Length: 446
Image: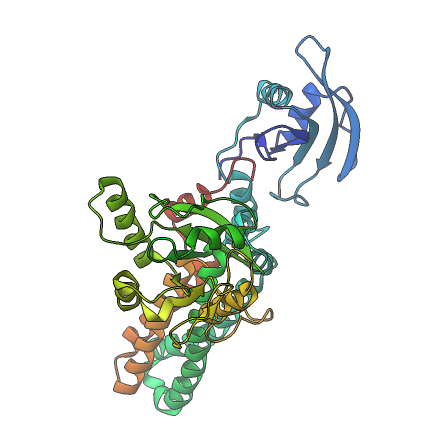
């Protein structure tokens, strides 16, 4: 690990009341000593001290609070200093520049968390949870990121590792002591233990779709022929006039996107151009984009106009919209009753009635098996899913090998692969490339 002392602004870019500059490394205290108006040599760990950051000529640059943390009892496990200065962009940059002049170097994205991982303060799954916590866009995403940061996923993976390690020890003994003929006495019991462990891992694996949806959010596409009220519904759901609403067909020519929170969930709400036959070039391109948005969406809200009979475009959309992710909505029910009786939700976007029933229908479509329990551990990242899938495949190979009498050397090798894949989730046996890929996505200062 690079042992140079690093520094970065740890707070979000922009102007605020305060900004925090983080310093970490074996020379962190020496760096701070050079630029602080008081000697920090006798400061006790985890204490804050008022003073000033000094310019090169020893005149005050800014009044600050300086927090000292001696390793290993810090986030990174190293000696660390945090400087809370005023939050103007210029003064913050100047304070950071003084830190660099005193001997620190700029931190790379995620380098503080990388050092925390390398110093054993957190495992790799917890390090990834830090980034998920920062980027969480919904209450559910925040809750599960916090659980992962507290070690819920890591403990689950370690319990699998413990079970498989005990079995692996027996398999390795078969390889080392083949003359003892141990396998005939223990094979059925080992297979039974492996099948129990396999079932537990598969249950965790099955949470990925829900976990991914919680972490990344859902796309919600408003679809329909012109003038059915898609833009009015967008405005009603958002609680503001985001889309232009007129009686003129074809008002919306392009996709409109907005972030939307419904209860604990985050959505990307997409208002599309009304789909109809047209020769107008711009409108045709908008319709093409609408059709693509329909294909890519997680949930489709297909609007129909309750004040008229279904037209050719309505019938076509009812045919092409994927049923498994489509909610049919009768709009304008303040003016007329729907003429068709198929399963649907009735609303008035203009009067904002029926929206609670619509939100309930969206919940039911997303959580077909119910919202995951808060006590449940779920996986939210593709890396974890792939590693767990590889571990499951290796365990299945071990079970099949034991049942068919495959040589102990091969069975033991497959078991080692299962353990390696589980270890990769929490950070054992991971390559530098994997670490770089993970931590490069972090923001500076984290």
